Length: 120
Image (cartoon, rainbow, N blue to C red):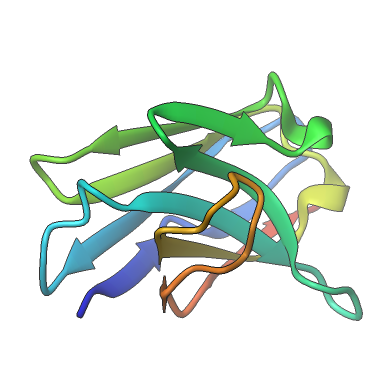
């Protein structure tokens, strides 16, 4: 069993940056893929990015702005978000598991989410 806790969300102005953390406890998740998803009000949850099979994958609209990194020694995965836009406003979730494709949402473990609001 893996428990995931996201942190680092908040209010930021357009063009600003945030770094989200996803800390795992219960067992090491170094062997798991880790995905980031987001859900804006009134919208379905969407894939943002994933660390899958030793590679990273991103939603087209965040490529070049968001970066996923892993610190397996700390059992933590990060989502660095730069040049944030109002349309990035959402609750962000991390997930861990063994999905068969990099953009799948078939993860076994999910965090509780952290709110990111981009507004002037």
